Length: 376
Image (tube, rainbow, N blue to C red; front, side, top):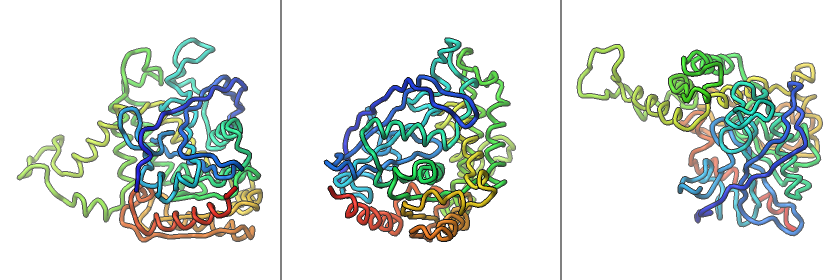
């Protein structure tokens, strides 16, 4: 299958303040986005891809540095989300560190970087920001919204906040809210960052430092939760880094330790600490049923006109299949059209990013249905 090839990020400036769930507003902000494929004459073939925690607008193709998009195996000519059929849009959310207005940018009120003063944002805030950009692109209704993990939460939120503007929702490896265990993992990761001496209360930019130690630990914690025990065992097992044990409490003894440290080091070089705090908190806060008295079915009532595909993976213990089935049940209770696929994959939560023929075939078949519905 062909690659999209080189792509160029675009940006859109918004002057109208964005009202946030916290009661704050974000005045004067920029959204970075990429598009692939061609919008048809009826403007009926647009698909929005919502990104997860450490991704951005670069969904597919090759950026200026030759790096492929984070979902390049899924999006492109002849791929499950076929850019010869669909006009695909990737948007970087506010608060991120990949171009859209975030903590690293200048706060017009203070003249310095926002840092820890950047307002807390939620999944719903991101969806409202995305909706403004979609409107600016002249798209009245999306053929589909798709996302995995945190991106899946955004896809679900679209159907509740802007139900008239989306025909299909594809929610992959996601949940209707985080479990207590998931919130706990996020809190430990945040504490690793905020207790790093280089964090400086979130205003580390002014000190010319980065809380890399905290970011490394946060990434290592997160990465453990993205993999299944079977995947770790198959890839690393108890393989030693050296030929013999070193009998050290601080040296790297096992290959899995080396791998986690490598992932942490790499992450600390490109990801912003304040962004990590904001995005994990948005994950914690997502709970559409809360405003409906704990009734997820009632929360999803506005989505009656949309159709859904929900996908889960058997070894994903962070967003387990049981959580996806909660979403499916709530949709069925509303008599909303929903298809559900539970893929027996060994990779854990990361499966939604990887090549799996069964998974990709499910998405390909569903997008073929959408394409037939979107011709014009």
